[in-house]
Length: 92
Image (cartoon, rainbow, N blue to C red):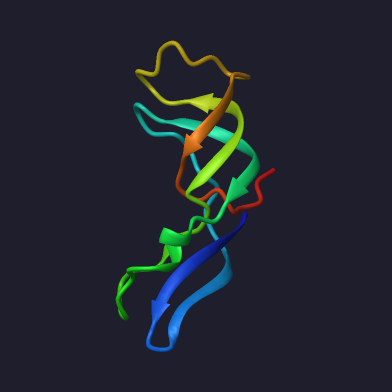
């Protein structure tokens, strides 16, 4: 899949489109098909040069497509919104 990553650099924060592995939910996690995502100002601030890049899109809304082990009360198909990691990505 393709995903936007945010990288702190010497001239400021950069955003780049990369190939990334398709996510699979781990124990206690859910996988959401994102229908809307936002870029929070905080994602572009505070990074220091040399810090590890991170996936962009920290808030999203969509529906649950898969749940990890131990997740209860969140059925596949449930509509969700909230904080996430990597909301700016294409998948399936």
